Amino acid sequence: PGTQMGSRLMTSQQQSSGDARPMTSVNGAGYTSHGRGDNASRQGFDPLNQGNRGPAPALAEKTDSSPEERAKEIEKQVNRLLEASAEAAAAKQFMAALEKAKEAAKKERYLCRNREQNGLAEQINMELTYAVSFNLANTYVLNGMLTDALNTYSTIVKNKQYPQAGRLRVNMGNIYFSQKDYLKAVRMYRMALDQIPNTGKEVRFRIMRNIGNAFVRMGQFQEAIENFEAIMTGNPDYQSGFNLVVCQYALGDAEQMKRAFSRLLDIPVPGKSEEEEDDEE
Image (cartoon, rainbow, N blue to C red; front, side, top):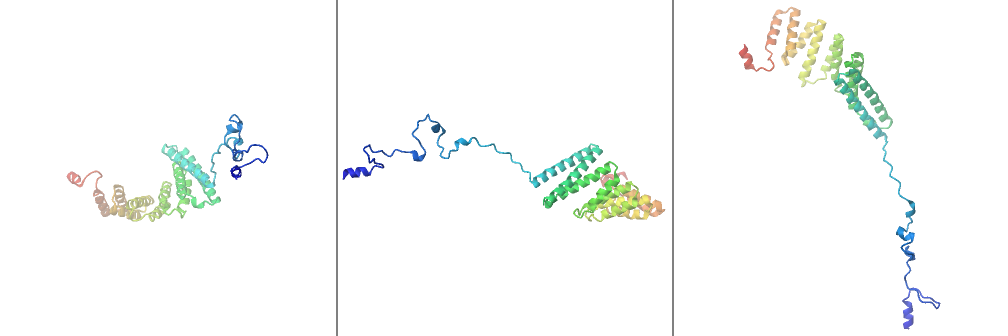
């Protein structure tokens, strides 16, 4: 019985006359009994045989050429052209400023079409469109191309997406004034005046002064007086006061002329206090 018990403890027993083999085999785990000098042992443990694949290829550079990213890059180019145009205008290089302004306008129109075609219409930058158009109109004026400037301004003010653009009619009025088309100038000034709230008194008075000056050029002194009187009541200045005296003189109203002259003298001198003015009297 002892011999049988001893034989059961062995993992393998030769039925022949040889010695019993102990449990020392590790071939099933991927190891071999070869020495360290063998190539397989130098490669280390590699059960998946990945050592013969060679090095991994280099990572390719990430390139994002989506329509959205391309549109953003074009928008940056438009902004750079705008800056270049403004810098040229500041340096009084008006023709160079106009060339950059035209290039910016062309590229901005392409940008809008590109976004519409790629379903990105909601990303159209209306502020950029306004800035490009305004800069183009301004550079037209600087180069004496007044008809082109009027057409560009007209396109802006007619766009309902620019509710405050109506104020640019002052610029249009100034162009008509320089062309001696005073009737259209008055029309533009009045349309611009309707866009200015009552809180913007200083701007309103400046526009009214322009209207009064245009009426003076047309010889319509009574209409001019109405504008100059409103200015002298709300925010008197020397130019409007003097023009009021001239208009009263042109109408031959001596009494009103004296009154206008007295109001002109009552305007405070800039930089002087009331006490200093009283001392001079």
